[in-house]
Length: 132
Image (cartoon, rainbow, N blue to C red; front, side):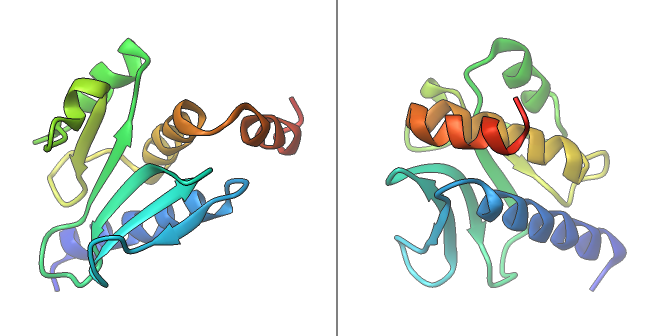
């Protein structure tokens, strides 16, 4: 396994762990044992993709804020998510590309995606945890 792949997997694992720590977050595999998503209030807020290692790791998040969306789209080989999700602000970010965002930025995008899809009560719990 190359250093780039190890780094990408490390970021992926960090993003997954962060997502699962958010209030009400649950991990599911709706399309089979290799396709991981994290949901809140029965809605997906992050697609983590193939967990088998057969494909390079990616993170797909919903970013409605124009500045955050533009930042995510500027990541190397980032693209609007397929299946029409891109029209709603979903962005897929490859993690193994040179210059790919670091774990901290990815987690910020995951939190923004969470805030976009979660019910107000879940966001309130998150804000309470954050001391705000």
